[in-house]
Amino acid sequence: MTKPTQNITADTARPPPARIDTANVADLITRMRAGERRAIAAAITELERLSAAAPALLQALQPHLGHALVVGFTGPPGAGKSTLVNAIIANMRQQGRTVGVIAVDPSSPISGGAILGDRIRMTAALDDDGVFVRSLASRGHLGGLSPAAVRIIDALDGAGFDIVLLETVGTGQSEIDVAEVADIRVVISAPGMGDDIRTVKSGLLEIADVMVVNKGDRPGAEQAMQQLLGALSIRATISEKVPVLKTSALNGDGIAELVKTLDVIGARVSAEPAIARRRRRARYLIARAAADLVAARIKAGGKSSLDPLADSVLSGIMTPDQAATRVLEG
Image 1 (cartoon, one colour):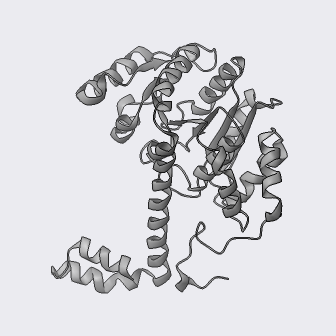
Image 2 (cartoon, helix red, strand yellow; image 1 turned 90 degrees about the vertical axis):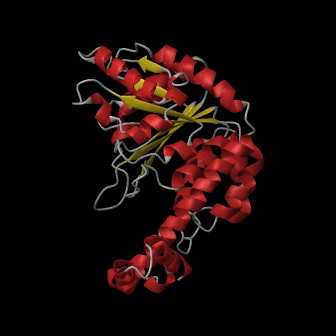
Image 3 (cartoon, helix red, strand yellow; image 1 turned 120 degrees about the horizontal axis):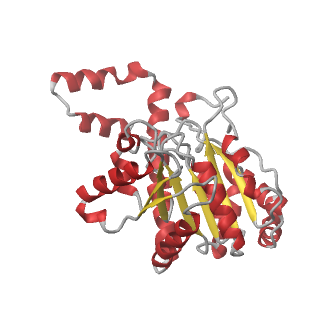
């Protein structure tokens, strides 16, 4: 077992052994780009585990990255995110586009793995070689994503998928990591969830490129639309830029309009250099790794290790910022 004093987290620990031969990475990527599902799955496994083969794999993928558009879906539980993503997959496949999907599920409290509820609902992906779905455990990350999601985006992008759809776990409050990872952010709500605006927290409103009221065939859908439009109008800088759409994923209403809206926004996003979009995801990875290292350092020392700093803050000798800097400096 790794000693606690080494300040190790799941993503920074000594890499597990590779399940693929690092000498055959080039062959693996050739098979991925040919659409071989077993090769794509193997690569994703190595990247998710951050195994010994992962660095070589990431480097070899670099020439093939920057093609896929990444669309993130977030919102409160019960809004129908998975069902909506399933309907979008079906629409995009009718247009001949290939789709990679990362469905971030809640982690099992026992094994830490994904519960797979999202994947079960995505029936449009069944027996379709143009769709690849990977479930990913949130592993307790409050932002709704784990850093492994970015590496899996690279695998799907490198495999040649046109679109990568990223569905977050659905806490509805703090999962704004998707803003740093996705090229387009879709925030989903639904009528009949109590106070509709409160179920979509202000942070999610601010990151939205598209607002969707799903389950639009239910009573209260129009009211939810008006509430969202009103909330967006308060933020004058974004009110004119954020479309608010109504969909019903189960019967297909509004799906075509939503996909067209994503295409319009996607055209603007694609005008931005791909390296800029990828750099944004790299910044997210660095910030997450730094936060995880600090958390691991505090955990390794135990809560009592902070007591001297806490006493200094209480007495006014230090500000909280100064104490935090001391923690970072070790």
